[in-house]
Amino acid sequence: MVEPPRVYERLDEWSQWLLLGMVVVSPWLFGTTPGWAIWGMSGMGYVLGVLLLLKRTVRWRWHYRPPRWGEEARVRGQPGVYRPSTRVARWLTRVLGLLTVLVLAYTLTAALNWRSRFEDGIQVFNDRCVRWLPFSYDAPATWSAFWVYLGLAGFFWALRDWLLGKSLWEQGEAEETFPAGAGGMEAGLPQRLSKLLWVLVLNGTVLGAVSILQRLDGTGKLLWLVEPRYGHALFHFGPFPYRGNAAQYFNLLWPIGLAFWWTLFRAGQTSERVPVRVGDDPHWVLLPCVLILMACPIISASHGGAVITLCLAVGALGVAVVTNWRASWRMRLGITAPFLVAVSLVGYLGWSQYQRGLTSAFADDLGDRIQIYENARQMAADHPWYGTGPGTFPAVYQIYRPSLEHQEAAYAHNDWLQTRITFGWIGFGAILLMLVHPVVRWWIRDGIYSRWDFAAMLILAMGGSLFHARFDFPFQIYSIVLLFLVLAAMGGCLSRRG
Image (cartoon, rainbow, N blue to C red):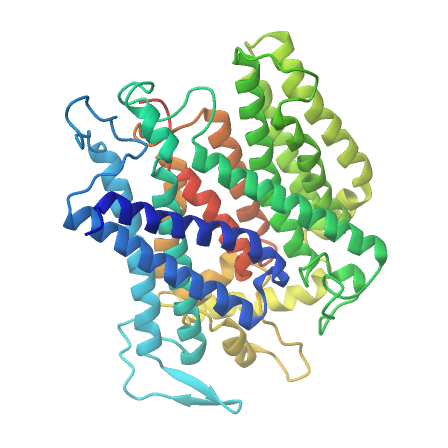
């Protein structure tokens, strides 16, 4: 019979490869916008959910407690003895899990309790719909939304569980090096979190470099392979059919890459090991990577993305100044000087984009969107509590068009409004509560130890995406939602010192 630790380690290893694989391939699959790409990624999310359930079963069935961040190291001579997480940390996790189940149940109920569906363009109503329960005006669309959300939930919780686990090396060190309740490594980050950050930054850098080359080439095909059905060459960027989505992806990525560089730079300065030559430390590789990631929203010609980049850069500079206010002059110079050079270069190259972005108010064609906003607000007013059903906006919007000549709209170009339309205030409220978790979690002691500037940069990146969602549709794109969930999972694991 295979021992529980061996089974658990194998399940954990499979989860790792699936998690990192999804993070890597999601932007390359044309932003995970085609249907086949969405269902493929969702299938991987289902597998991750099953692996997580199997890991939980091993813990429960054999009373196995794998070493995890936020739990006290093993006591010598008493294997398997751990300090459980604090009561507040446990309750925060349970509330987040309950909200996840609530949103999934809300969507499933709306799909089962459908009020109408569209057959050959004709709306067919269901007389058996229960009005006091969540319902859907487009049953097939809500079913699709449910299966996508289920895969994303499996990915998020599997990633969070994997990040909190200790690597084999850290398990060996835990008995001798880490003090009880330390929750992490003072000079750096745990191996799994570092591995995830390296994968994110390096994969994003290659993606950005390819996207820039594609823009310089002038081709209208995504990755020189597929020509989208709409837009011209400047409307696309890299694998993303819409340049605004590309800018949103990179604006989620570069702040956390910069925070990772800060962490490694600080660890290198406090380390006793002296580099053999300048640039010998691997963290210097991150500087050109961050510069490429910052330049991508500018080169993409997304006006709103360029303005978000500028706002994030100002916020990041403020975090750097406050964090290193009392540090040595060499530390302050080493952290702020490269960043100031990068910001100056990106700002100089993208000044015209900043001006256009401020003028157009985050919209490439605000005139067409004014009518969409008016119709969308009317939709929200007509369905205040339960909404029209998750995923139903494109179908229901057709009913609100003033005439057949008015353009169709798959998105409201305002994710906050579109979510309120489809989920209603009840479902929308549950989603808002889930967004609070990464902000609150850092203040609770049990978890992966992190300095406040790292957590602040993570929240800054997420906040930039949420702000951009007021003027566009980043959260309707699978790859952006996946990256946002990666940052949310990190935020849900970080903690101040225990």
